[in-house]
Length: 212
Image (cartoon, rainbow, N blue to C red; front, top):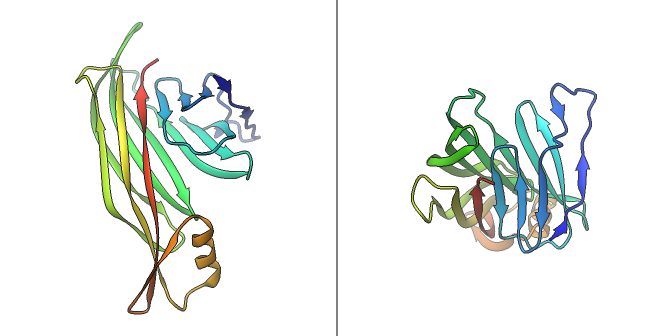
């Protein structure tokens, strides 16, 4: 596999924003991000030269994926750990992709059993797909989301897949700059109804969360 360029972020506010030196990523057909507890595999990239910047915000591990050809942030992948140190613990993984300053976020909560060198995923306790911030009034049409284990539980890996259409609604007399930004980010104009113009872009993302 071709190794991704690694960039470590340093900040004078070290207690709040620290580089992660123990995680890594490889890319071939897939992007594989290895956090301290879990591994996140992305199967749907269409960028040829991704760069991954690792950081730590508080106790949350963060991998920011950048398109090196354009310098644009493609998405962020985060692991929010359970700090209880219990044998059975709960960890949350988030994948946040941005379209024209509108962010679609997948959140998956995993119950992990950890006893010495033995680990397993006991269950998926919940998952959610939503919009965390947006350039204008935006919602998801035709949302589908599924998180599952191909081999039942307990397991060492689970699959996830989600898709839908991101729809931005803006007054037909609204900002020309916002409309241009939507079109530049891959949205297509879907017509005007009652003075409101609609711009849409489909998304279809999938991958694997696993132990390693």
